[in-house]
Each structure stands twice: as C-alpha cells, then as structure tokens.
Length: 329
Image (tube, rainbow, N blue to C red; front, side, top):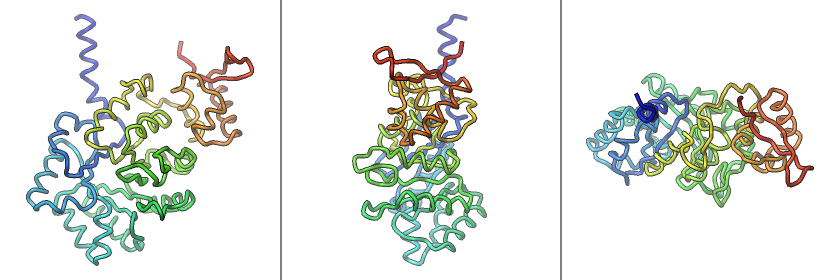
C-alpha cells in the first residue's frame, strides 16, 4: 500500500476524531439557514440552539420536522433562553417547559439576560430537566450593554449556577460578540476576565459564546482546541472545525490534545500562549493573558523546571528573554 493511500486514510478519520473530542460546540439557528447545511458538517457540532423564541413562530409540525432533522444527524437541540424569560414574565413558565419537551428539544437553556429569575424557578427548571432526562445549561450575563455585570458579579452568578449541576455554564456573548461579558465595545476579548473565570471554575464546565470567527481563533489559540464555544453560525462551523484541528494558518501547529500538563489554570494559560507563539517574552504574555507579572514569572519558572518550555536570549537584544515550547527529541 503506497504512502498517499495511507495519508488519505488518516485524513478520512478526521470526522471520527472530532466526534471523540471533549469540546462542546453550540451552533445557533436563527431560522435563516437551511438545516441541510449541517448534513455534511454536522459531525463538527454538538447541539443546535434555536435562538430566542423564534422557533415558536413556526407551525408545530414544521418545528417538529426541523428538530427531528437535527436529531437525525446526531445533534442535540436547545431552546434560546430568552423564550423562558418571556414566559416567566407572562406567568407561563411551567407551561413553557412542557411545550419545549413536547416539541422535542433535547437540551434546555435557562438565562437571565433580561430578567432576574427567583431561585424557585431555577429549581423548577432543573428538576424538570432531570425528570425528563434532558441536558440543561445555564447562561450568565446580561444582554443590554447598559446593564452589564461586573467581573465580581459574573463570578458570583457562575457560582450560583454551579449549584444546580448544569451540563455547561454559558457566558453571554449575544449574536454580535460586542460589549457584553468578556468582550469590549470593539469585540476584543478582555483576557483578565477570561483568566478570572477559568481560574475559579473548571474550564470544561464553561462555554464562551463566540459569534465572531476572530474571537473563536483567539480563544482556541490561548485556551486550546478543546475550549467549549457557542453561538457559532452555521456558515462558520466548518471554519471553526478546521481551526480546532490546526488546519488553518491562524492555529496551524496547535496540538490536538492539550497534553498531560498538571498545573494551575494560570500556568496552563501561560503555556498555551508560549507554545502557540513564535517569539514570546514576559511583557507580551502579560498583555495577552492579563496576568500580573509575578504570576507570569512563577508560571514560567514552573514550566521551565518541569521541562515544558525553554528560555533563550533574543539574538536582536541579548537582554530580552524569550520563551518557547520545548520540543520532543
């Protein structure tokens, strides 16, 4: 058997490799896309969120057919959290849960982007999901740019959400990725916020909504290809999959596995930055991660002592120390 045939066989295993990945990818359906778009690339998604309450603009039979189309591809299907918020304000919260279940949704989402839900409704939501054997997620963050949570408030709400045992906790990003939670008014990532979140909670429990492709690239580059991402448009799903696999220039060379590095979240964060950069010094690491100098220095020391990175002098400026991933012999 020739080498080219073996290479093709390896490439053919990529979809199966992606199926085994730990990363959760949530694709958003705004009803403007034909579900058949996922016939060929649905393997790269975990579940589809039918945004807001738009799904209930459809006739019941049409909605059921759309949901079953996704399920036939092995995908979960979720409501948008705003739908339940609206139903709560109308006094129809429990009725809404039953409606979602009858429609065939296999994931349920609860958010507080607009309202503040009393704890008894959160308990009712989680009890209902558990009784029906459904996955459920809880979203943290406000939709209105004028009423954003502080970082401290965000962390507090994540802690409260953790008490209910959701499959994932979603960090609000809206459909724009601008001016909400971890994004500033230009759509840039506030890395100090990201670091605080992943330092305080298991990274595999957090899903960052990242509607912009540049945001997806940066999160993968800095946090690794297995970071959970949501609000991915159907038209961006293939691009995201290729970024996770390191098949594009932006993430070329990123390891498919995050390896067996046993360290604090801060040290892992520093390691991801170093291994995916060509020339990195302490100042640049601090700028990218938002970490304090002492934290970065301690992380670098730990990584060097355990043989994960190497330190070199910059040939253009011998006073400047640069860091790189230590290559296996």
